[in-house]
Length: 458
Image (cartoon, rainbow, N blue to C red; front, side, top):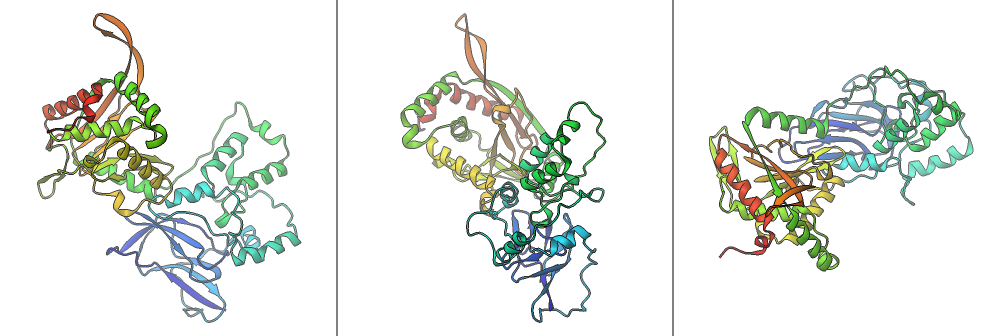
């Protein structure tokens, strides 16, 4: 037996250090070749680090949330043969002995690879897929070899054991919600997935061990004293840093305007009825994006980025529209390039493609930077007003609130109209309040007379 040390690889683009955002294995696990070991995050993307060899984990090089230099020791494996390091070489840090339950689990290999996409939201797809059964033929050689051993001897049920204080059980959002509905505290559930991840089958086994009456006894009115500490790491940390920087550096000026979208919604319904099958269904966003593109022709100071350190405002002819998209990991802003060159159906297709890419963890690095203005929407949960935070170093952001039907006076009569607020924020250092108001009024005029969206300027 020998020792194989895997070092933090050079991810490229001059990156000297990365943040460790997740482990897929623990000390005592047996891993297969190409099995994901850890997730690390750069400024732009989350990257999976796979294992180049088959071996057993004997030491981890860091904790979740640690910043690790390229070339530092990531993980240490015990392998067949000589390995690439001396057996008596000191590890990067002392590895704590696994608990007895973990040692028993380590006797059975757990090398099922995780199906996850790359990119900045790769960890999202992994969490969503963790509770699903593996696809046929997806088992690795190590996992396949372990299957007969599992079938040959059924291990007796393990007693529930509390985790250490502050230790967060690994589980997908679906498993956490189901556990909450069933009244089960995950810290008492033994996980059978990779790195001790709790699966739906583990909840069933835990419930059978306690008896069917357990959930009923826990339901109803009761005091709660449980606490959970969630480290702010990975994408959530990047979002927090970005928002803090934006609010610290940019004096925000907000402007809200009510817009009558009755005619716009009627037009959208007609277009979807006539062209929906051949061109795809339209939402409100591509129509609003088109209105912003047209209005920005007269307000180039808003389609801009401000380098406040150099004291330079760069105005762009191209509209690279950031489209804020909510994912399970947080808010991500992919960039719709050259929105000025697209019709509404092309805008709709690209918005849908970008949203699917970031939610599936397949967004490319180039699609996550370079926007000149941002459009954000909370959809049906949009509320009546919001104060969106500017996406630094841009100077403007437009937020969409929900559409509500309310009585309005038109030509002396009270009629039902579909009304919506646009909530916008601007960098008051470079955008005057009058310019911001006039820009939103221009967008309003285009949306309230939607035929103008299809009239090109001479």
